[in-house]
Image (cartoon, rainbow, N blue to C red; front, side):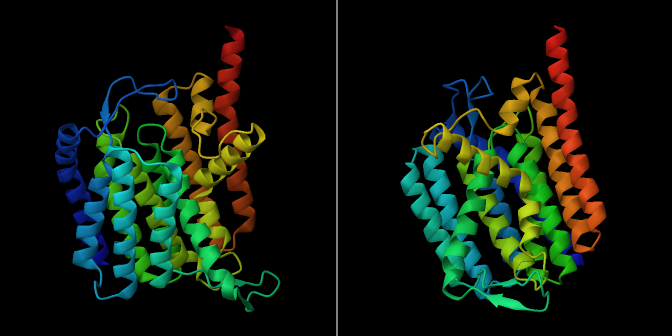
Length: 341
């Protein structure tokens, strides 16, 4: 237990100490996000390579508290390095979508090679029956890792939003990993939580620094890896549902974004203002309240996962109903306020 506590504290301290240095570095190398279009919600230039703080907090903590001789840890560090370099290049110089996707696939392939694999599903009709997916293991694993990596990237539209949602997801995965006895996944979850908590004071509105693609891709990549180790590989009937519900907010927001762009015949990777956080703000909800509402949704989804793995299905349905209600209320109130005006 003390190992997890010290790993958390180390990640927090490293993140807190490094972030001001990263801010200074961003100004020196010109890694600054200058608002150029109406999609941006900030009005002043902001440093955007804050993900480096998260990466180094992760790297130092893992080096101290994890088994570096472990094949999987080595693969995770190597894959993460590829992702971070890709995000950093994009934040500093820019990189086209195809090149970014190619690097993500390479990083995901590294994880697969070193043992992060979706290899079976549990038969929902017979919990004890394991269904091997054979040759489909590789494409399914790559799809999951690349998909989750990009969902966190796409939800990173407001100060503190992606880091907060990632923290909530990591907290949920930490509980799931503990529940299923996945000690390595638990340690990685705790380290992410610590790194995020150290970074959040600098990133919450008004942000002093953005995590950029360096951070959002990195966090998505780690969460994808942990969800495979901590949940999907557990031989339970709900194994696949756990990470989907845990990361439900970014997954569904990204899914609807893809559907929206496809219907409107727009490029799937083209940015727009149709994300949930944009829609809430367009209804008159301010920046901080929008982020806090989405935190609440993420938290309730996490609670639903905890209830679900404890076989409290009725409570899960109730919790998800409350989630929908809490999303509906601020929208309803804001809409009525606008109508009254």
